[in-house]
Structure formats: structure tokens, C-alpha cells
Image (cartoon, rainbow, N blue to C red; front, side):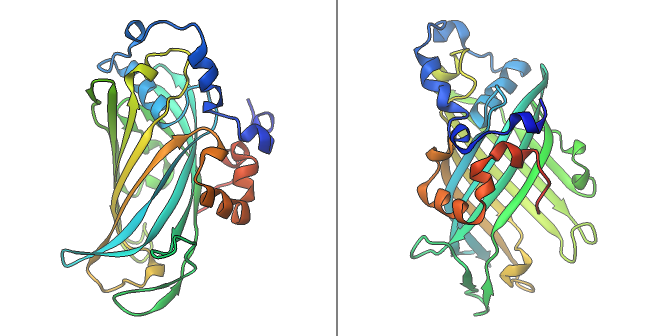
Length: 288
């Protein structure tokens, strides 16, 4: 199906994804035990990952987080600003062991005291006041395997030392946790004037009883995010031996209206196309 046929109105966009979850839950479906995924089977594991990260039916899903970023200098942590971010996804099954993932991210930095959008930031180490950019990146297209993202298929990663992996699932009672790790490193000139370092660990938590329902293409999922990355040039940290640490908590959502209200407010103002028609954005030109 081409992107022109997949475009949705704003109202349709608000109902994609888990909008059908309640109806599916009420359906006459097999018992949880009979449909429990085999987490040792690569195909079942991949389907489980996609149900927790997005949706197996091709609809738009979002993973949002609220948190903070910190400077780590000489072993000491200094809060810098808040983080309010979301990544939008679709997954299309290519074969039993492969999905194609389309994704883009829109993120905002916020004031530590007020929680409002940060437009000017005073670097606590230099005293310099700088303009704060917004972050919009993607869309990106990457194959997803049971072991992780196939980054060899992403041309811009060819000059990087890049790795992505899904850790084996951890279960206890009705809970399941799946952790993914991203490690990307690169050196100039491929990364510009500075070397690039990106490390991210994200853990997804869902219920096995939800995953056991075969009619559900997606399941309610909570998210815990941690990262350790290099500083961006706008932050004015050149010459300071430091790293940028991030942490945040959030959820997977299937409707725009399930996102944090302030995120919706900011995105309506600065990126209305993202809310009006996320599917078209996922099939449109790349930003960032």
C-alpha cells in the first residue's frame, strides 16, 4: 500500500493502534496459556518485541518518555534540562524473522524548574547562554530481526561502529521485560568535526497475559530509558571532558490523545503535520 493510500485524517490518526485493543480484549479468544508466546523461538520472540514496541498490524504507534539530561564531569552529575520526547513507528512484516520498521522522533528540552519549553539555556560550566534547538529526526527505515536492528542496512551507519541488540526476555509472574541496547561510535570526518558516541539502554515492560491474546496486534507497555552520549555542538561543551547522561520513563501509546498533554501542545504549535498525519510523515522526506 502506497503512502497516498495510507494517509489518515487527524481523527483517524487519533484512533490508530491500540484503539482496537478494548474490542479485541472483549472478543472470544483462546486462553492465555494456550497462546503463550515461546520466548525461545526466534519468530515468537520477534513478534513479542514488535507488540511491545509498536504494532504488528502496520498501524502507527508511539513511544514517549519524560525525563532529564545530566552532565557527567569528573564523576559528578549535574542536571541540565528536562526531556520530553516521542518516537513514532510502523512495523511491516517482511518474513517470519524480519519486520521493516519506519520511525521518526520529535523531542523537546524543558526547563528544570518550570517544565516548560527551554529556548535559552545557561551552560552551568561556562556561563554561556545558548539557543536551544528542537529535535526532529527521521523517518528512518531499518530491518528488525529477533536479535536486534540490522544496522548494516542503514547507509549512514556504514562509517560508524554501530550495534543494536535485544537481550533475552526476563519474566516473573505475569510480567515480561525486554531490554534493548544501542551502541554507536564514529570518528571525524564521517561524524563532522567531533567524534560521535551514543549509548542507549531501553527496557520495555508488559503483561504475558496480554501477549497471550492472539487477536491483539499491540499490548500496553511501559518504558524505562537510559543513555550516555556525547554533547551536541550547540551545548558549548568543547574542551570539557564530559558525557551527557539521560534517563526517562514513559509508555507506548497507539493514539495521539494518549500522549502527554504538553507534548501535544508543543507539537501542535511547532510540528502540526506530525499530529495531523503521522503516517505521511513516516513516508515523507527525512529530517536531521
